[in-house]
Image (cartoon, rainbow, N blue to C red; front, top):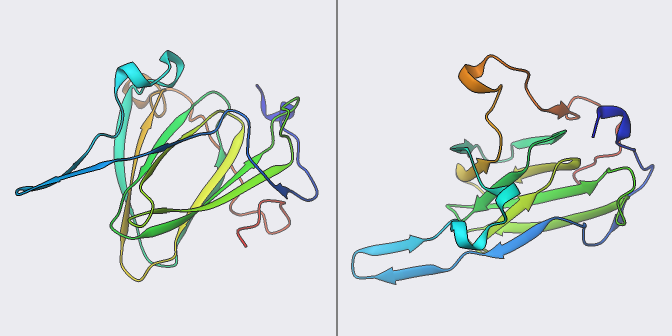
Length: 167
């Protein structure tokens, strides 16, 4: 998919997005604390398997995105501390759910993994009062091997007239 193959809907309607997968993250608690399995190779399709992973911290009231990837699939894990409002918009040409938007609260109160395929515009905002963390495991290396390649990202966050509103 190229940048030209994405379409911008004037308005999005709430609804599920084809190819986006939500996976509840189970917390296993014992006398030492807790453990959450973020992903297992036997539960993840080969095209979604990560080649790199990172954790980011987002300050209260701050949003990351909206942006999309041309080729990259993101596997986010929202598990706390804190909660995020997560926004997803289907901007893929030919998608059966083109023009759909999904908005969900994920994090400490609703631990979920989310697979976001290429072309699905995504963003999240920390709506809590403390810094909060997000884990991401992408199926492509950021900027390629040795960070010497192109960055697979189309940013929309600086477009005031864009259709990707976080309301």
